Length: 384
Image 1: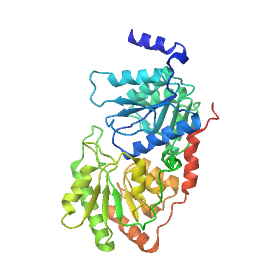
Image 2: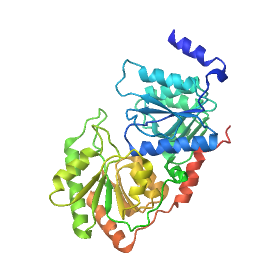
Image 3: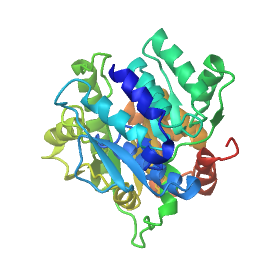
Image 4: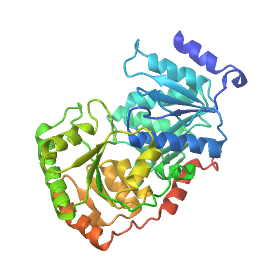
């Protein structure tokens, strides 16, 4: 009965209910700097190119923050009753003229993909879009089929990498899917980032725990081995260069956040090396401004690498996932600045980093200005 009522409500005159120009959906409020960047970039693009002046953003967990929208929908990790968040999503969708799925790896789970399809049906599939997203890996065959339906129903899907485009063309060849780019470069359009005039100092690291199985458990043996390698890397860099070492927290999750590995490193090295730890900051512009102050950044976090690139800070990427390697390929990062964590020792980054500090770093082949133009492809209106 509830489902029938919802559908009947959605079919009533749009002028009576559509008070919001766009409901912006993503993994927002989860204390992740990458998702924060995507949230701001999505809201900016919707306002600038789709004339969405009255937007609502769904925000999980961390509600006490400024968002680039006129309205905020508070979503909860601990729901008061089963389906509470889903009902809130539906209500927001009914009142919105379109749904915008803004950035990230958001198309891999059956339940989550089907929720996205429901939201579009309650708003307007012909006006809804997904921007700067990646597709897969799918959790099941059902998830792949659900994604195919989503791609066919959504008016426009901009994928940020070639692998996602290949998947889309394979499972939904008739869908309107185009290869665009990550959304983060659009932060530069907000004019809130300014290259510092003071000389750069120190080396920063954006690290994360990666040895996590599908059930969310950490492989303690693998993490211990990685911790040993990172401590060796940091010790050698500090002893050889004398540069201050800063550990940046890109994910502030209470259980699986970057503080886990950062605190472990500090406990191991605090009596030997003066380490600085910077906690998670929900303001992506402040994060970019901070990244611009370092001589170099070693990053495991994808958006650590991306924001470092935008800040024109030399980045050396520790690739633990295909998305990290894909980004390096997109911007033409020097091969010596990339490390496959499954096949190489982390200490292999020492030589190229020290060489860069003394002789100058090799710049990525893709200029930031070109990356910005590619990011703007997410807001194409030609399909409309």
